[in-house]
Length: 196
Image (cartoon, rainbow, N blue to C red; front, side):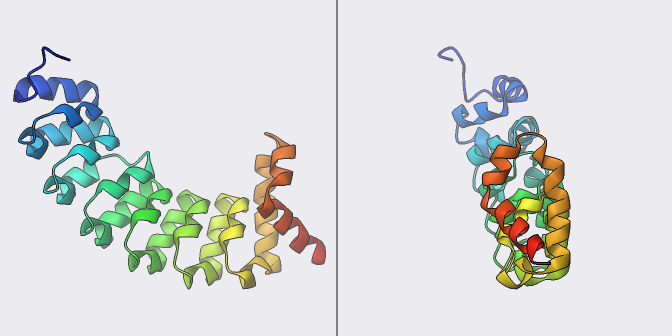
C-alpha cells in the first residue's frame, strides 16, 4: 500500500472497484468524488462509511450501496434516513435496515410491513403502535416465528398470531431443536399455544 497514490483518481478507481472498502484510504477530495464513491459502494455497501458527508446525502450513492447488510444504512445521512422513497427502497432489500430509519418512518405502516416481510425480526425496530398492529405482527411471524417476542403483550397472547408463529418455528427447528427450544420466544409461543 506504500506505493499507492491515494490522490490519483485512476489508481483509486481501479482499487475501489476491486474492494470498495479501500475508499477509506483515498484522499478527502476523492472521497467526495461521485464516480469514485459510486464504484466503491457498488462493490461494498460498507464503503458508504468512508464517503464524504455530502455524498452520504446523495440519493444515487445511497441507493447504489446494495443493502445486503442492512446495518450499513446507518452511514446514510439523517436526511435520507428520513426520506420515505429511500427507506422504502432499502428495507425492500434488507428489512433490518429499518433500525436506522427515522422514528417517523418506523411508524409508517407500509414501510414496516415491507421490512418485516423481508426480515421478521425487524419488528423490534417498529414503533410501539405498529408492534401492536395485527397485520404487521402476522407478516413478521410468517417470515420468522421468533419475531413474536417483539410484538405487543396483547398480540403475543393472540391465538391466531401464536399459531402462525408456531408454524413458522417448526420450519427452523430442524437445524437444532435444542437451541430453538431454549429460545424465550419459542417458549412464549408454546405457552400461548397450549392455552388454547
